[in-house]
Image (cartoon, rainbow, N blue to C red; front, side):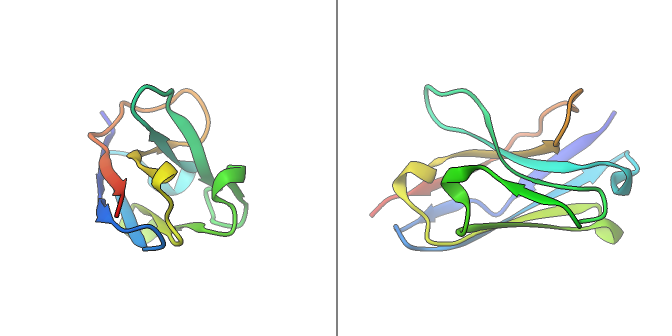
Length: 116
């Protein structure tokens, strides 16, 4: 089955930046629209950014617009999330998956903590 492996998280101060990566295996990655999701403690998982299969259509959740940038490299089966101007409310576990249902099995995610 499909495997998703996220990386790049960490502890960063408010205003800082991180770049997340997600590698998908056992799938024809280039055929799928992809998304980055996050789940904060006590909250539901939410989609924060989506990108079409060819990278030409991109959408962002309102709270991250202008700060986050999603991109992909189909030759490496990888989707990225560049996160700038991070805020404490961005603290969450970040996951990648298909943008649209049905979703693949979730990976382990990568923890992002924004704190001074």
